[in-house]
Each structure stands twice: as C-alpha cells, then as structure tokens.
Image 1 (tube, helix red, strand yellow):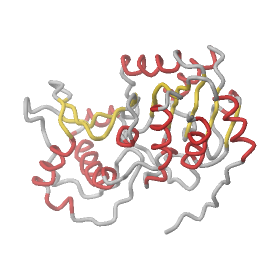
Image 2: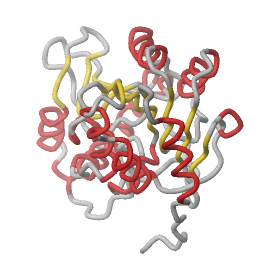
Image 3: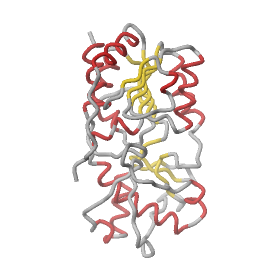
Image 4: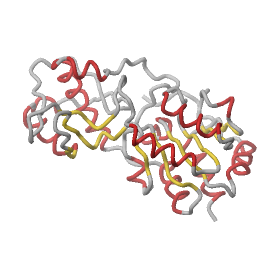
Length: 281
C-alpha cells in the first residue's frame, strides 16, 4: 500500500541557512533510520511506524527459544534487507566526503548502505547485519555464509513471500519450535549478528572513533535521526560542548531541535542531495 503521508517540501530558506552554516566548515555527519527509508527500510519512530518491542540482549542470551525466534525472524528480514540499495541521500554523503566537505559518517543504522554508496570513513555505531560473531570464541562470519547454513537446516523458512521488515533487519515469525539455530563452526558457540541489541552497550572503542569524528569537525550535520537513542545524544553533547553549529535534517521533532542552529524539516534524500549540490565545488 502506498504511503499516504504527504511529502514535506524542502524549504528553500531553510536550505539556504543550512548551507550558510556548513559552508567552509569541516562537517561530521550523524545519520539515523530516516536516511534509509527511501531504500525501503522503515523507520522505528516515523509517523505511522508500528509499535515494536525488539528483543533485548539479555533475552537473547538467557533462553534458546528466544534465540530461535530471533534467528528465524532475522533470517527472513535479512533477505529483504540485503536487497536494499543506497539512495540519493547515501550517495550525496559519499560525494560530500570525497570533496572533503565531511570527515566521515557516524551511523546508527545497521544496513551498511553508506559503505555501499561509496562513503569511505563510516563508523557503524550499532554494528552491521552483514557480519555475524561467535559470542564464545569471537570468530567473525559473513552473514551470507550463515544464511546459507540456516536455509539448508530449515528449508521451510524461505517459503514466506511477504515479509514485514523492521529497521534492524528483523521480522515477526510465529512458528519457531522446529527451527534449528546455527552454531559457530569453530567452537560450537552461540552466534549473534554483529549489531548492538537493546540493553547492550556500544563498544567503547567504536564510540571513541565516533567521538573523534565529532571533536575534529567544525560543525555537525544530523540526518534522519530523532536522537532518541542515547548514543546519538552523547555525540550531540560533544558537539554542543565544543560550541559547534548543528544542522538537523529530519521529518518530525527530534531531541536536538532546541540545540540546532538550523532545523530542516524535510526528507533526507532530497535535502542531502541539495546540500551536496551547493557545498561541493
């Protein structure tokens, strides 16, 4: 069904003001789920988004049945997730980095679309769904390899054609009792996609890398994030402590609006493309 939400038109005055703030400055970028909606990946908190209660890290660790539910749903979501392609906004950010306007991207998304669009310095704050880790021995696996093993062990799982995709690459699956969960081929340990679950902390070294992008910049551009998640707020705090001007691009209210020098209330794809057109010489 087509989205009935009317498009928010890009305000030329707001765009002019954003260009004025960012021009001549080295810009750090923080992106959220709103950057990927035009690639077919839904937003957790956008208008019309269903209420979801994602599995916590504690649930995943505590019970084999929770892990079955997670892997069954995550596998179906992965098939749709991996088929998503970078959109105009992702490509605009890659262009801004190549031109030296930005020093990289910190993203709260787990879809790896910034890298696929050509961005070179990307901090995946919450990890990416295309990698899988063993929680016992630390071995890393490509998601495609684990998905092939999972399909072979559970041929019925690939039968559903209509998948309701979530921002973390998950879907809802009801019948998981017969599901076989893949194990680590090195030690037999528990496998988990390399993403930060609810209730799990962002790795210290990863946050330090994200922070370094912000503290080495002259401005912060926030795109497609409501800044509800703590990791995003902490980076915004770093910018405001250093008195960096902040530009927020998002449809709807964000927790950074009161601290933004400019708020552009519009879609990220068209806004980022317009900024790249104006800022890249």
